[in-house]
Image (cartoon, rainbow, N blue to C red; front, side, top):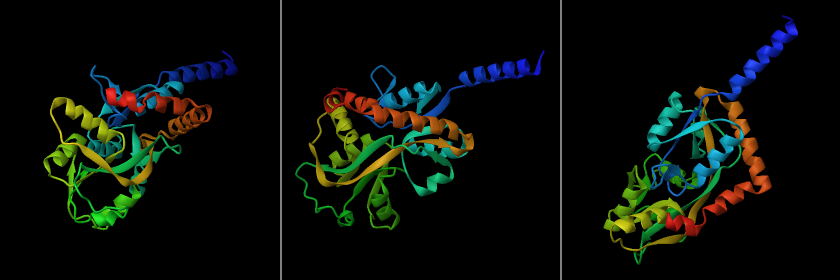
Length: 258
């Protein structure tokens, strides 16, 4: 057998091996309407649909697991997860995460109160220092809010692992202000409202921050090539209008009816 034939045969086997890569295990948290378990027991949502499309385009199979946020971060550090999506940028996370360069989703962090409840707020977050703020455990709400937390400005933070629990706390008067997402908090509120009556809630403005979120990969898993392919595909989708089509598919009417 000639050397060229041996090399060509080796390249064929290598190409086949690349096409038959095992699935990556990708973690995400329950965060409707971006990612959640639907009524049929399947993982669904705005970002889930987008991420599935991108990995399918680069012929990389994935398995998405819904997990608590703290466990996702721990598993990424230890290399037990290959990646996660819709992760906000924090400098300390770059020690164990490879962030995608393209923004996956813009998140709008905003504030919710019980309707009619008087809150002294006009955009200066430090003015909320004496209120009981409900936040998600180990969750980043963007650099502005996170900096104030680190500086100890908020002395009455109450954290829960599930956003649903924060909505119920707000309903029962256990917190004064819920720090949440523009789409996910109203979505969950409407879901709970199907089960039992709730007091109306309202959004107060201005919003805390519009913050980009990203696809990330565990550095332990050495997946920078896949990360780069992910970025190239996402960038192309934005340029060609496919990205916006995915976002518009999940318009306000659909979200409210899920």
